Image 1 (spheres, rainbow, N blue to C red):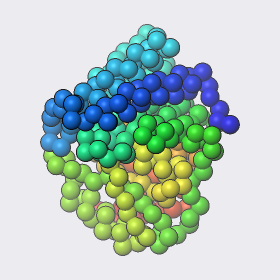
Image 2: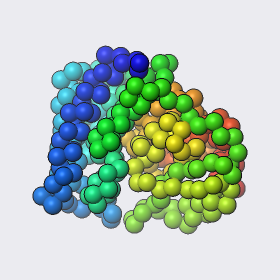
Image 3: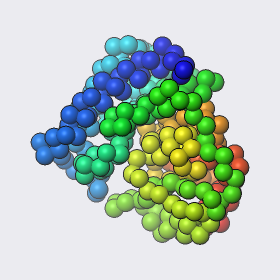
Image 4: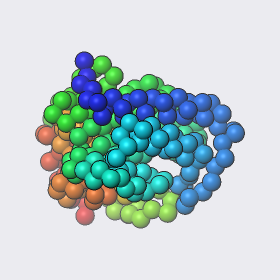
Length: 264
């Protein structure tokens, strides 16, 4: 059975409530009011509604905690030691194209350390959870990263810089290195789920640039609690803040890091 701390229980409850509304919106895409936030970066009324539900539910249960949220930014709370880091709809472009691969992502920091995590895909009803020092789970199943040890048998996930994002040439060099050394590369379009899939052993590794804390906070803890390694792309410990990330098991991580550095 997964360990559910009081805080993690609050987080899963909020994710399920927000997820029910997302499912209704997903079935009525033609009625959504969609606006442009930037090139290829959409904000939908579903995204905004989900964020509102999550903040309201979490504030009700933990009224003093702060927030870092994709749409609303930083919300200060009187309790400076706790902060929720939330992406209300990771994979917005998938959502708007009726692709059922998107997630609600919630991470909880205590004194600057990630202690609880939820990544929830309401379409599949897959609830990935982790609690520091208590492991990672998919619903009732304990998670471990995959045990593959060589790159030729590894399946690696990634995120591709899209229209309006920098780093296309740099990324193509990295992609060429990884494609030439592994069994395959996948780009699914939701970083939180990519990281959760690494924790579940579905992918053997993941790298991406151009990320923000709400994209990766929950996924970082999931992978660490599933026995994996997460760093920035320099091999350092700033994956949450640096804007780039590399995750894999302890055997493949240094091999992938060497490949990616070789592309520079």
